[in-house]
Image (cartoon, rainbow, N blue to C red; front, side):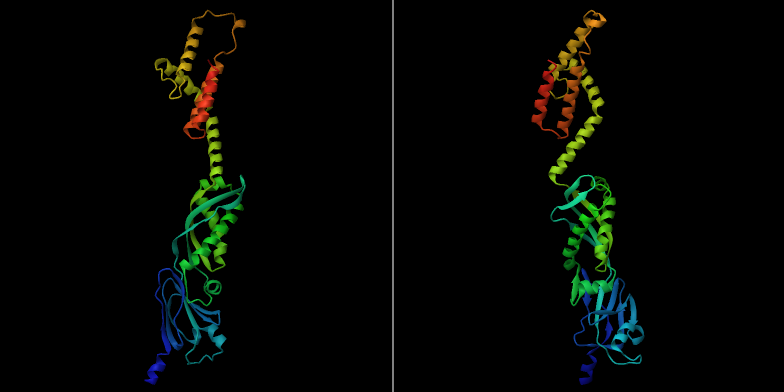
Length: 334
């Protein structure tokens, strides 16, 4: 009975089956000692480390390992064992999962202020997903594991998200590419932010295989400014097109009192047509007496009304602003 009890205090088989979400675990040794010649099984996607007094001694990758002085060089040196030792030995054994931890979410709880090349200081919020894996057992063990029994992905996520938020400001603020160009190409933005996040994770022994930006938003007032600026640029490009539409609307008004679609300018269109017809029936006056381009103001007014209608349609101006300006423009041609 006594011999059986003593044998149970020696460990001759060491292995660990992965648990979902567990990154590292200290193998439960209690007061047991490891038998010389014991078998260590490290599965695919795992690493095992022998740690003595907080110092990583020997690290083993996937495979079946026989624990002897010949394959425990660092631990043997620390313990000052003879190469022929046959005694059990004490050491903390840790297992680490090197599998990629996927589908993790990141986001800015509060807007982050960055200095943009084009806009200067702006505040933005961003959201996305990322993955990481344990790559450097020594760095992870010293900086994150310590004397803990277990480290899980869930316990690390708050720290990792905080690091990402900090890297976001660094990555965007230090970029030579303006924010608008990055936002238009989320693949490029994801790569830039991954470059900023990698060094932070590396100090903990972690790598970032994937990093994705799924949404970026500016403050509402900045977004409104960008919308109006875009509308005005589009409007400038459509100036000739607006004039063409006005001419077609006048022709339509001759056959249909509903005239210039939906903007209440039928009467003004009819007046313009009447004036044009009257001009055609009046005998030609001497060249020097002909007034200079009398129809130009009317054409300009209609073009401006059409532009205003475009702005109303895309939401750049309000209905009240449109009605007031339309009345002013149409009043010029009566």
